[in-house]
Structures are given as structure tokens and as C-alpha cells.
Length: 193
Image (cartoon, rainbow, N blue to C red; front, side, top):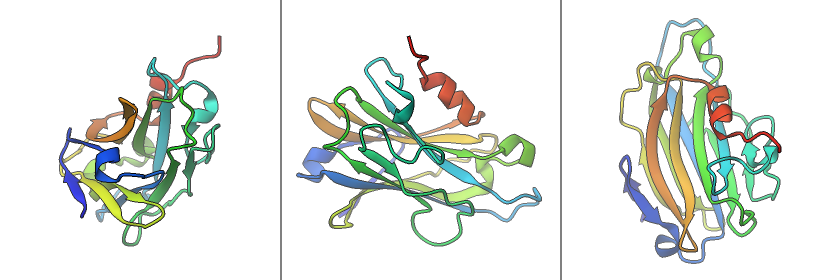
């Protein structure tokens, strides 16, 4: 049975899905009919963070131009440029056993490509969700459906998967930002020393 989360709620995956090693993180959305004159292109990104809240190396930022993390623990299965169709629009495969111990948290972000130039925002998006399923059984474990109106935001932090006391947990975040992907890169990137 799926556990439906509301904004801010958390679950312990080791308790709700004992033995989970491979997970699918699916993100989906539908586009409202708008008059912006441009197609929507939403992009899912994953920032794999260390204890300092930064990515430990460039390859721990997984997105449409880097589909697999350095440790092979996170793989983006491709960029959906339309959001058309039922179910997941973009899927991230997470192998919890492969994730480098230096990584303590995975942040799942969705941004609108060229939102400002195209005059687009998440107020024009509906039915947004993030869900986690067992990749082996395809059984959905948890789901968080966005129900806020993000009328000016061009990016949303959907959720975070993090380690606590040796177990993986998931938190529904649902935080909107009036910024693009570059603002997240600036926030989480740590220049080489």
C-alpha cells in the first residue's frame, strides 16, 4: 500500500520497504493550456550532497547532460521534453548500495528550461508528483503530490532522500524557487580546492 505524504512529512524506507536496494524515483506533471507561445520543457536534476551540503565532485550532479553519478548509484533515464502522457515523465533509478558513503543526501529538483524567456512558471503546471517505487517489484512505496499554487516559481525542490542512523529516509519538500537550474548549481557546487 502506497504511503501518501504531505509537504514536510517523512518516511523511513527501511521500515516501510525492508530490503529495498534499487528504487525508481518517478516525477510527473501535466501542462495547463497556456498562451506563452512556447512548449514547456521541465528538467529533473539530482544533487548528491556530502556532509557539508555540497556535491563532493561534479559527477555527483545528475541531470540531462550527466545521466549517471560517479559511483553509478544514480541514473537519470532520460529527458522528457513534453510532459505528455500518463505516469512518470522522468525517472531516476537509485541503487542505494552503490551510493558512495560520502553522499548523505539526494535532492530532487525540477526546473522549467528557459522559464523567464518563455514566460513560464509552475502555476501553469498541474498534477505534479514525486514517487518512490521498488525497481524490482515495481510496487509504489510512497508518493507526494504537489497541491500548492506556484504562480511565480520556475523551480521546485520536490523531495530529498537522505541517510539517518544507517537507514535511508525520504522527505516531501515541495519548496518553490523563482530561479533556474544555475541557482541550484551555485548553491550546491563546491569548487575544487
